[in-house]
Length: 232
Image 1 (tube, one colour):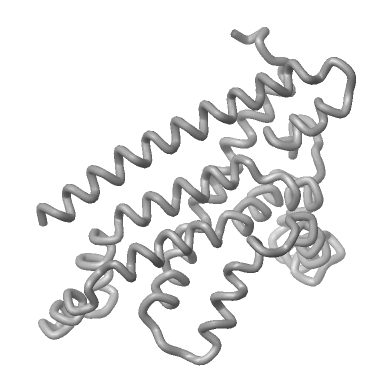
Image 2 (cartoon, helix red, strand yellow):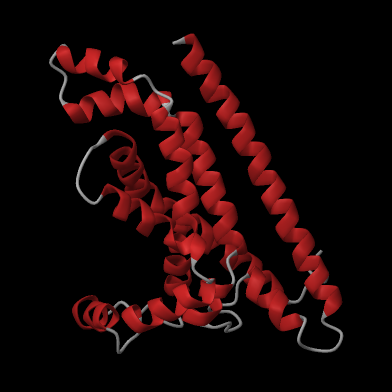
């Protein structure tokens, strides 16, 4: 099995899983907050916020990566500040790949979670609030369990998108073997050299297996969560 792919290719697989997991985990809290705000709150600039959330889906990924490089590069205003204050460097590091993947996956996560929230009857939340429960407690005990299927769907969509992210990643962090080279960038690199089609095809097969496995697990979890909600 170890000879099926070279060490660099296996490193790309491991890094892709690491990047996708971190991107999904870090996106989830703000994703829930933004989805709830768009689904329940009324405020000025709501449509602007919605447009900003969806922007990574509309813009070419290379443009998103270039904007990240300008803002979060070592000479960028945010990147320079992060390095000076915390020693955190994002450009051309795996941490930057996490940021790029999270931004590209964020719209899919928010959309799925928002649909889950909008499917919940607001009167259930209002009833809990009238009993004196704080808003945060209402969300944690009423809303969150009811939106669990949508939450799982959003997380899996984000994970799958992060696993396959290419344009923003290669622009922001390049494709450095063992450091920033993910599955997608490794396949792209292999296809540029003679004889690289075989390893690229095997990497593609691995990515399909991971994606299908994630979808099957998410479907199982979502069904269990839906049955639990229906029986509550």
